[in-house]
Length: 451
Image (tube, rainbow, N blue to C red):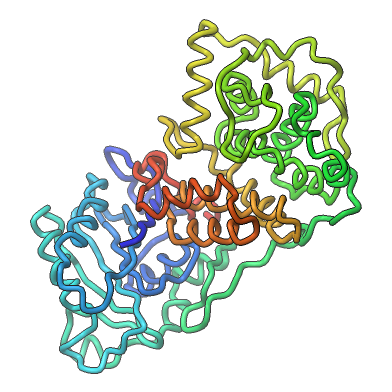
């Protein structure tokens, strides 16, 4: 079991809202509705996967995706126990539904593929008081209940996959603007950039990128760093896609590893948190950094005063606006300097590890994803590698390990030895799950993007 992917339809609470009182919520009435919901909630059509969904109080709770064990695997108890542990995070669940996605043929109605796995899961979940309400197998052309042998209610060989996409809920999700990678019954397809987004940043001709090529140490200047981070913070707070000159600036700035890390923190928390954390951790004091991120502490946030005039970068904010933004970032916090520095340091590291007490800014992270997806289409490895690595981090903190692995491996293909990608690849390959994805109150909820 290489990785686990989890999505939560809504944060956990002591009492789930009554769907009947929430007309904007999605209503699941038929099996096709739940099967139509799953790929939209995960952003892709699962392949060779088990998806387990908890239900309770009339609503869907936790959705977990894990790779299927190798065919013929005999020791299924540990696998079932792991799935049981993931579903146990939903205290309001009173039942579960299992969905097996596989290309293995189902030849005999009484002998469905992965029957032993489903039986093991039924036993493990029953011990936790979580009965399996149904288990469906979704193949290459048909889907059918694995627990029903009656041809009258469950005709053989099953319903065609097209009924999933054509379900009432699936149709409603498409109407709301949701989509996913990999169409039912067809090969996976990539989601292209939305209308209005630039498809490829200018290459070679932009002033920021050209200046970086001629003087690669530019982003080690604290004033350049501050102006670039201000531009990123402005972009992350704007629902509109950035223009080509701004994209060029953002692309060039990712060459500085400490700035790359600050951008991630700015997306999850705020520009102020990224700025103060960078200063506390010494990110502006180093003559160079090697891709591993910020280093040891060396100064406080207020030490930046007197460093000189803040520049107006091509594609960035006006100099007066940069001064205003950085002045706000440098305002003394309510806590003592020592407490503030410790808080800034912990918050910075917590974001990179997907572990803060409060939920991150998922809307800002979605905007970061939009930008770095565009930048990942460039040919320059110094831009492509960090963009792909950031995408790997985004999908890891969302709890989608398989997608994270793919982006991190592509980052290393673009720039072998890129340290950020190497470090996170080890984390994801170990099966470690971001703490945000473990807790319903902090987990990413895809449907909130389209509801």
